[in-house]
Image (cartoon, rainbow, N blue to C red; front, side, top):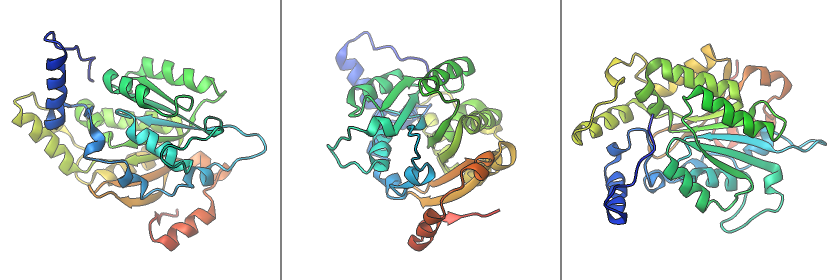
Length: 292
């Protein structure tokens, strides 16, 4: 996937011009590493669909308090990571919580070191959100970095993973088998998984942008056999191949992407989803639940 970008020898002005070009020409970020992603896909569009109490309902605090651990893959510059953190702790803008780092920890990773550096500098919760540069498809590096984080808490898996508009980039750059492997790794690492798949029209648009810029096409685009209704394709892979169960769909964003919540099937018997959350979701008509 993407390698570290070197600053142009011309200095600061050329670097700024390159950054501006990447903003104006999304095709210039073929791994999804847009420098200002939240300008055109603001976090609020996802947050309005997610119940603030979701994590507290999924992981009720017991006598032995331990933090909820989240993994955010493809975190970009951290805007959505921070927004999710504040949303699930019901924190207002500018508000902090002294117990927050004991209640919820996120490990946020992205392939782009410049975006990760920006996330680290701008994060208002440095004790609770850890940002790292990681090519998630690099098995050796992934194992070392994720295991190191989990070991700090005496854990072997994350409570929940966030995969927000990243599946297409994995698919385009690593092919069908790469997507299958990516979902396999995530499902083995997380008890719950929140996925926002890009629809097939986004694949076509990404390929078209590259061609307009005169850049090389995605290596796997024309050979992909997994195509069409991508949300359904990912549901099938996770439920039929990787031992997960589709719990609910929180609805669609304004850019027509579904938010899908999965859980590992072995979690079902030991940690069922609270009935109160299901009933509230039905009353709000915001959640669609599947029962097997």
